[in-house]
Image (cartoon, rainbow, N blue to C red; front, side, top):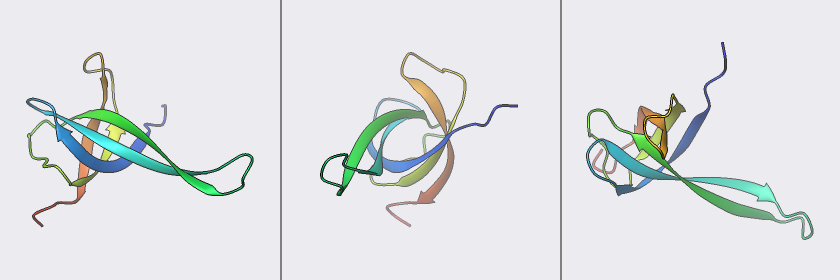
Length: 83
């Protein structure tokens, strides 16, 4: 059994039905200046119930490829904008 990767990020766009784009921030040490810098990456995730709004904080889990650009699905909604 392989381990499914989990990512946590904030919803930045709603791309059509059942799809949201989240941005994941990670902090890494700069190799030369030894200062912590932020790195960002966007992922498209599958939102089966179409419940996400822009600004929500979510956890997504890796799954089989659902389309050319979607390989993650929504696991939990950590913090909603209207909650």
